[in-house]
Image 1 (cartoon, rainbow, N blue to C red):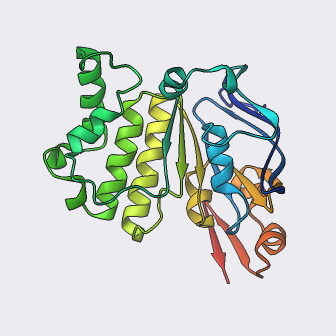
Image 2: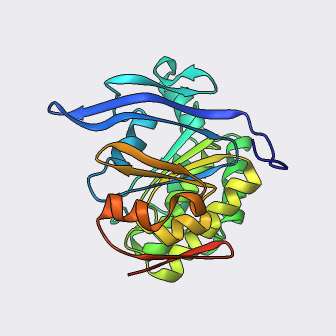
Length: 260
């Protein structure tokens, strides 16, 4: 481990997993670990397996070979309620025309814990997320009335109401303008840090991934090309290798700029 870095207990261990559609490998011997309080981004071109990997970690898809461990336990041994209380998922696409109120959507995040009705602890968890994400102005509004950036904050809010140990995000900045992209990722970065949870995010934007991630994974054709700290992994050679584009990569403080 690095000198001076806080040592985290391992939370997620992805061990040599394979996944295929119709006999064609989409994930090929993928292996990595993510610790508490780490924000990890998965980068790669369309069709590289980013979304598939996120869905495998959440057990939406079952791996063909290999294992995914959470705290040393295989996720295949978890019941659905237990898995939902530990891992939350923000999908790339949802029903943007949902007419439920924002508060009703946040309540859904307590499903792993609810028996008959919301308890005091459920209300407290919802109120904490409302405060953290500044959602109070939207609570009575229909989800369908909100802008894209506001909807994304609500989706993240619902995931956080689950009080997960790990949050999985599939293209959380998709279809957002630059201001909302920065707002959403800044928010996620602070939450990961303050709550000590882990985040694994599939994303296209290399510069945003570099700025907000503890580490990045470069995925291409289902295989990990490189992984590590953004400044070590995001370089001209790797980008040329997986995107087939010649770029200049400029490191400036905590940001990485990509110039075509």
